[in-house]
Image 1 (cartoon, helix red, strand yellow):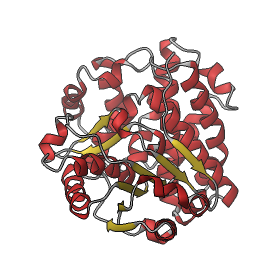
Image 2 (cartoon, rainbow, N blue to C red):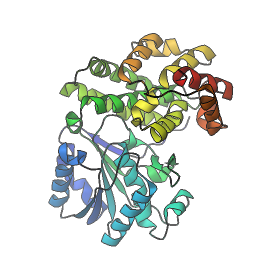
Image 3 (cartoon, helix red, strand yellow):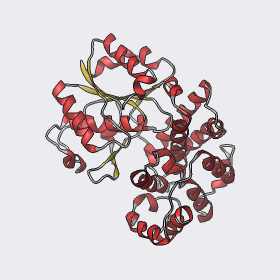
Length: 366
């Protein structure tokens, strides 16, 4: 067993204001990285600005991050940080903003690298330190060594390594209270996907299983509220957020398995939000895991107070059905896209081309 998670994580209501002095350790100038309006609407941006100002730290704001951020926007943010002389990066938002902040930190420290240079994943200078402030209960990026960025061809790809751990992460669940029901559902099933995919990875350890199982146990009740069409209470929002962090801790050990990898395709080609895109494939993962016999899925889920059938029903209640269909030949033509992909082989029991073909046909062939 090996476990390494060098992120200082601080959670709780008002956590940014209570820990403003910690920001001073990173330098006198920073670039704030956000999306369009979410960071402002939930109050996180104002809290971070107040904390920076209280420590005499100058800042600039880069709000050019869009869902599924492109590597080009990360280069643009890195250039702005470099020109401003930023000593560190603060990312505020959901997965897109937090992941972009990680790569912007690389770009700022290596301004000679263009988009293709970053994708070679070799750079001479260490990234700037990164502080993350999560505003959704789903990504887990606050504690993972991963940044998922859209490459020049339009496909989502992962940067992975110790360079992508944040130096400091803040998690205030009150920032999630402004999220509408659809976003709460999509980010919530993303957190559940992290837990389930980690649990059903051949690389799982006792540590990652502990995080995954506790995450599932915490996520179930608030996700049932969401599945019933109701917004979670403040207390449920807090439980959801902590569950998402546990999912992030789990995948920091194992990474994800095939639902995430196939989900990227649904987002790229059909615009399905990331959490929903992954969740489409979760029932297939659960059925596969139970059938392959490599793990006792039923016994594991009983420790969380659920079972495969109930969990599948919850996931399907939360996840909109894709609004398109494929012909048999179109579904079969997709299979080579994931040939020899590690996410399939490290799923418990392994997923070969024939099984993948069957999954795609079952889901999308009308």
